[in-house]
Image (cartoon, rainbow, N blue to C red; front, top):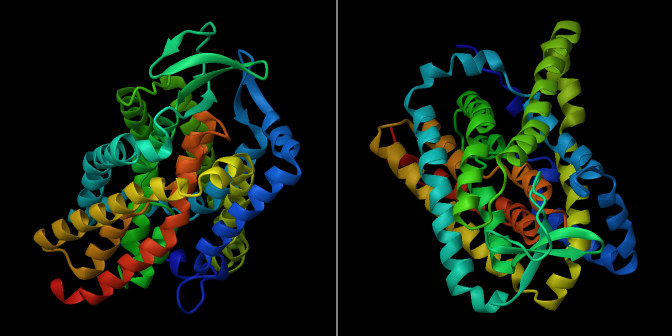
Length: 396
């Protein structure tokens, strides 16, 4: 079986990380500071950009600047997918089945339970039991002011109908969106650093991306509904179409054309080299906008980040432990067990951010929660890489 090996060669340093990936936590921290400063000195700028949107029933549904940034987050990931390897992935057997089982049968529900416990119970008093957040009216829904929808109440804000929900529920929604978004392109780096099977890692990344087209909307709609933040199915489907299907199709056809016109060597050494920083740059631009809205919340309660980070940290470690243990019980080789555990632990935060922005708004607590997922991703995953390397002897 011939696997694509771009994941080893698209501009990474000898240690496996390029400058953007190696210092991602630092860049995210700088974006927090930059966004807060922007919100203070030019509060109208981010609002103006967010106003450049596609409106439905007088409600902004798709922010065009954010949609553009998020497309460029996703496209470099999708263009790396070797669909020939995906079709043959059944030969991988146990590692693929383990990844799919953990990502779709365990991870969404454990994230729901853990975030509900911490945000809805243990930290609710710290967040503010009476604190509220204004989120977008669900796509396609037109309720009168004062009507209730789930845990929210319809209010008029700056001439636009919004849904006023408890702030902790808004953070909870963001955690749910992270919990049902398995695996990012960064997992190729984590698997590489853990000395795993790079070809198998890429195949599992591709399968997860394709599986998300079906299951992300289904699980998202169900869990958000159970959490009393109901979202119409068409909103989640629109989100998946714009932020997963569109870049997936663009990646597939452009990859096919470039390989035919320029060859695989040029594609890997030239094209992917140029694309390498684009995902991170687009992510950082989006984060500046996100934090320009959330500056007052963070300055007023700097521990907000901590309240959100705790359940996300526990979830990441728990899913890694479950995946790694099951891999050992299934008798997998270490080179297959390590990436399988990494994929389960890692989140596809690009899709989570995109969906939170589309469903709840750029200034929502849900969007902030997904950004916190980015903030803790690198240090936590590097910790798990070190655990893998120290436990290689557990496996065949």
